Amino acid sequence: MLEQSGGGALGTKLRCSIPCLRLHVLSLDQSTASPLNYSATQLPRMNWNRKHLLDIESLTAEEILTVLDTARAFKAVGERAIKKVPALRGKTVVNLFVEPSTRTRISFELAEQRLSADIINFTAEASSFKKGETLKDTARNLEALNADFIIMRHSASGAPHFLARVLAASVINAGDGAHEHPTQALLDAFTIRERKGKIEGLNVTILGDILYSRVARSNIWALTKLGAKVTLCGPSTLVPGVFEKMGCRVTYNVEEAIREPDIINLLRIQHERQRKTMFPSISEYAGLFGLNRARMEQTKPDALIMHPGPINRGVEIESDVADGRRSLILEQVTNGLAVRMAVLFLVNGGKGPQGVAA
Ligand code: ASP
Ligand code: ASP
Figure 1: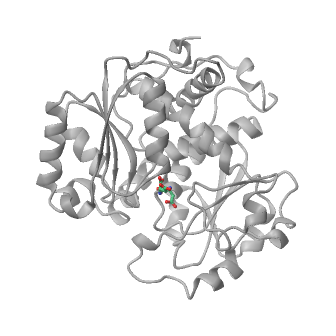
Figure 2 (figure 1 turned 90 degrees about the horizontal axis):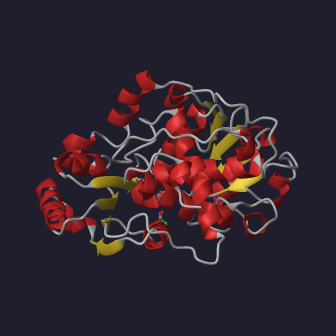
């Protein structure tokens, strides 16, 4: 049932998404704003009417920007002495993680605590959910406890979409197979916008295992909708040319891929999703595509480095680079909290940043 409802992890989702691709351009001029006060030049957006956050593909640029503006308001809350707000008081959130996760789960849980929600953690091995019926039964049981929100991580693409159809609760996708990881893309976009003052017109290279990466898919949707130019690079077995149909440029020449970008987003090799090894060896991958000190010297001096974690030091990224001045890796983690607070707030009926208590 899951298979049917979700579609193939790679084929179906990609194929049906291509005709819908629209490149949205920001309507508000951010290009003259400095990175630190960009929002002062903008009107706050109040554009959210969705009950679920299942993917980035179906969001408009305005909706994405509403999340980013709302997250900015929540980041300000996080800098106060009292960091808690009552937005979800009396509401129950279930964290349903049917695939291992540490950071994403902790980040959601802290976001829920900061919003004063009641929290139920439910972790399980995917093997106990082999049949779609089992997942449905579990979800119905959770609903019988009057869960208002279900945060779901699952190894099957489309699993959160399935839950959203059968349950009354709001569903937030925390990563489904190789399909999407929407909150990761939102926190990445937030981090880029905070550091560069804008997204439109930036060059962003995503380097690594694109084929099996839900982070890559969600980032491609978010960045192209917001007007960035996206280049994909990695071994040809992991970066199929079909991604050009999503509005990206594909290159297999790493030197060329790192020369121009303002942002280089590195991805881990997703061993758990590969049915066979798609490249000769880890050390060969590190040599051919790893971001090391020598390659950093070929990048623009103000190019910034991102990675969704967990990082493999010495493989896709050398320690020097991961811990260096131009690495945004820990800022991404910090921003993830504000972005997840914003998403929960919005799916609970919040309309935009103006609703966030000052
Ligand atoms: N893929 C995992 C996540 O997003 C990585 C981790 O948990 O450390 O949460
Ligand atoms: N944490 C990200 C994910 O869950 C990236 C990764 O695992 O490499 O997809």
